[in-house]
Length: 203
Image (tube, rainbow, N blue to C red; front, side, top):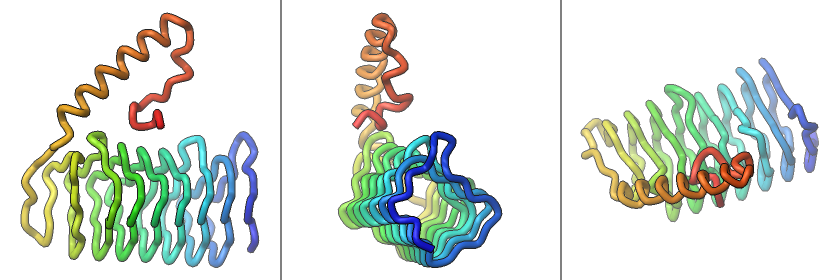
């Protein structure tokens, strides 16, 4: 099925309880959502999704290269998917998500929130993390990650506990303070709705 360049209407394009294979969504625009669906061998390269998209259940051998997926909620089985160079700012994993043999090389994971998530045989070469990126109760199996400023809490690698860390804590505090000041000024000027809810969404 060829849906290249499709532009979702204001209410979005929703797929519920479907199984799709070899669908081409490259360069799609707008709000795209999958509920309890299984996708395999689908292409999402260079899509630009908006409106808190949700990809829910199973994604196998799907490509998201250079995709803009800001605010995406994704899970729970993601296998052999390629997120190389993707904009994954403020992405969040659904509870008990498992990523297997996925590529996050060069992806922007600023502000991403991974909780109760397993990464197995995944790569994060040159991935970008911010002080707002968090890994909580995550498991890493044959997966190496240079966390940098990201927050890591109660997580494990190869069955061994990782030390809790948050090298970017001071930066996160400063960013929140600066954002609060910008929000106060915007609210006073009647422009509060113009600001994103999360500082990591600002750029």
